[in-house]
Image (cartoon, rainbow, N blue to C red; front, side):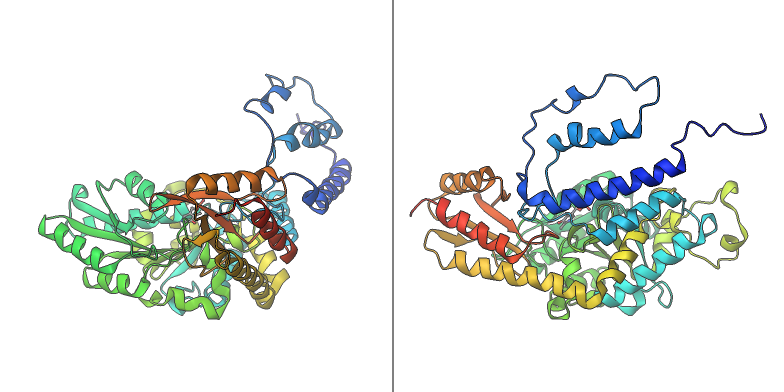
Length: 473
Ligand SMILES: *Cc1c(COP(=O)(O)O)cnc(C)c1O
């Protein structure tokens, strides 16, 4: 065969037509999203029941395929981009991000090595270096000038797991037995800490007490470190959270960093949600102490208008990371790598293959600009403060935590039943969605303001809903 048969592919002129059609479909969706109930009403198996048991033997037309977005998929979609999305944390996106994602899929290149597509590495390094300045991170974390550097990973869980592996390796290289290494985080840390430590082989994972603001108590950390050292164990890793998932509590990064330094422990910061807010200089006091930090992660895919997956991971010094994760293979040899002239991001994380993830973030940062991003974050902060004030001023409610960012945590003073029924009323309305959680044994409501399409009126509407649905004291 001299010529490959290309007739099975969607002809490119049809691809163009359907591509335009699909962009229209996405724009129509976003334009009309407010009229949909936030959550899907599908019961388990409903969507699967609309899909044949086997793949089609013969090709189907793209018209039929695209029509099934409305017929099959939409009934099972919970609308994370709905302006009434106040649940969990946002999983934001934006038109600029979607365009970057499409470009990445169209190019479909692998960026495991610089040489396998130089632009994948160099755009990513540039964008990560931009973030260092945008978020007020230490200049040494830049890939162009510093000993450190940044890389995009799939999720904060991956970033944290990577840091845990490096920390374990450092301790083992200094002579510790793998069985003796210990990881520390606060009792309010995200479960990715425990899971990551477990997967990285830590047998000792300490959950340190928090104070009345849900922040790690450094005295409790110091006491645990002493106890573990006395027992012959080897402290290897500690995580400070800047913005916990439960209540956005902020651990004392500097105090924890000083303890970490004096015990030669790897100090990681999990700012998965709140990191995006550091585009605003007035919030950076929350992360004071970054000069005492070895690694840092935050998710642009949460609050920085970039669709999943896009998690930023920085190290203050890339050498220990590379020492742990670099593997050589004859297939991967090439001049640029061998000369040490380039970054090969496959050595910065677990996967080998990597997609052009930085394109969407690059599009976003350019399309909004630093001022646009600050304005975007600041309006969420302001609306959350307004809502906090209204709730705090109402005798039916009590605040569960401060609102340092844009998450408002409160409960009904009458107790869990009244709080649960308020959650149900809000969520049954279809126009807003919140998720409850538990702190100090009591249920509370988390209102996370931060969806791309949320406007002030949506937060006002949510307050009206809370006000009318809450039972009297
Ligand atoms: C959301 C969150 C995570 C997990 O993020 P993934 O990217 O989904 O792994 C970790 N830590 C904190 C504090 C979070 O809020």
